[in-house]
Length: 199
Image 1 (cartoon, rainbow, N blue to C red):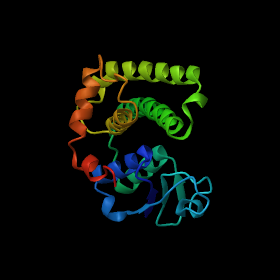
Image 2 (tube, rainbow, N blue to C red; image 1 turned 60 degrees about the vertical axis):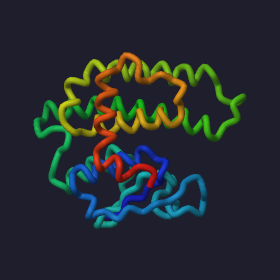
Image 3 (tube, helix red, strand yellow; image 1 turned 180 degrees about the vertical axis):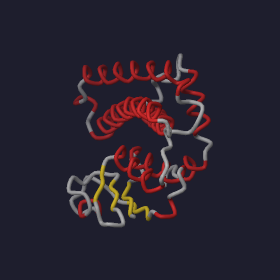
Image 4 (cartoon, rainbow, N blue to C red; image 1 turned 90 degrees about the vertical axis):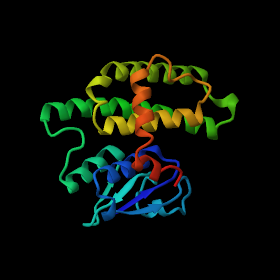
C-alpha cells in the first residue's frame, strides 16, 4: 500500500499514527508530497489533489482520513475503538465530533496563512471559535468514556490541540478542560506521535 501525505496535514498524520498504533505501518509505503500545485505528485494520484490518499495493494484509491482509517483497521483485522458494536459506534460518534473540531481549526489555519488579515471575515472566525469551543466542552464531558484506552478519538483530539497550539497560541484552549488536556499530554508521549512529528 502507498499512503500519500504532507507534513503539515493533520488528517494525513492521523492515518500515519493509526497505522503505527495497529502495527500495520510495515505494510505501508509513506510517500511525501506537496499540495496546491498542478504538478505535485498527489495530482496524479487523487483528482482533487488532497491528502491523505491511499492506494491499496489492489490499486484502489481511498481518500479521506476517516475512511482510510477504517480500511487500515479492516486490513489489520482489528478495531481500535472497540470490539463491542454499541461501544464502537458510540466512540465513532465522538470521533466524528473531534474530526469536525480538527476541520474547523485547519480551516482557520489555512485562512490565517493564506489570506491578508483584512480579508479574513471576523464573523466567520468568531463562529468557528464558538463551534469548536462547544464541541470541546462536549468532548470534555464525554472524556471518561474514551480516555482510558487508545482510540481514534484520542488521536484526533491530540492532533486538534496540537494544531491549535501551533497556529493560535494566544487562544486559551486548555481552560476548564482538564480531562482533554491530560489525554493530549499523555498521547504526545507515544512513539506513534513522536515518530510522525514534523516529518
